[in-house]
Each structure stands twice: as structure tokens, then as C-alpha cells.
Image (cartoon, rainbow, N blue to C red; front, side, top):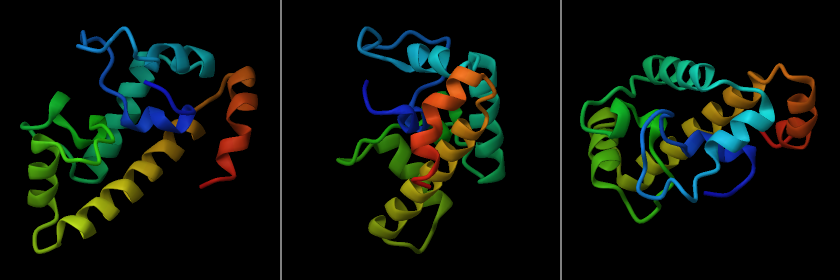
Amino acid sequence: MGGDYRALTFCCKPGFSLTFGFKCKRDEKLLELGISAEEFIKIKEEFSKDNDWDFDITCFGSVSYCCMRRGGCPRRDVALVERYPGKTIEEIMKIYYEKKKELSKKILESVNDPDGKEKIKPYLGLF
């Protein structure tokens, strides 16, 4: 719903209708970077498997698709508490945002389109 290309890390799985789909810029941003929906899904799902983020209770079955809701999300937060037992919610959210930053970097590093590579240059130095 906004943000620069790094915000793709918080986007939902392509192919599903969304309540606020009219505001969503995911498909537009993927097109600008030359990333197909299939590649986007592959990146997120591999990251999820590598980080043990697959959970049936979360939207689309993975924390990789979870959004940025700082006020909390019942599904995401329950999954993260299960994934990181013994940690405080503050510690868990720190891990969550660090992992989302890693995922964002993976998404941007997957760009092969020359125009897309040019668009992401300013952001790669921020990781």
C-alpha cells in the first residue's frame, strides 16, 4: 500500500483477492522490477522454509507473507510466539523485522531486469 521496493517483504501472496486490493501496489512494483508473481512466491516460500516460518494459522500459510502491523496481528503473533518460545514479544518483533529485512534484500537481489536493477540501486546500500 506504499513504501519503496523494500516494502515488498510485507506483501501478500499474489493470486488472491484482497479487501484493500484497490490500494495494493504489489503487482505494479513487481512489474517495475521485472519480477514475476511466480518468482516472488518462490522467494518468499523458500525463505519461509529456510527460517521455519510455515504456519497453517497465518495468512497464506507463511510468516513471509505477513504484513507490518505494529499494533499486532493475532495470527502472525501467535505463530511467532510458537516459533521463538521463551522470548519476550519485544525480542520476537525485533527478530521478525530483522528477518523481514533479510527477505527484502533477497527479493531485491533477485532482480535481473536491467531497468529494475537501476531502480533498486539506491536501496541495496541500505542493507
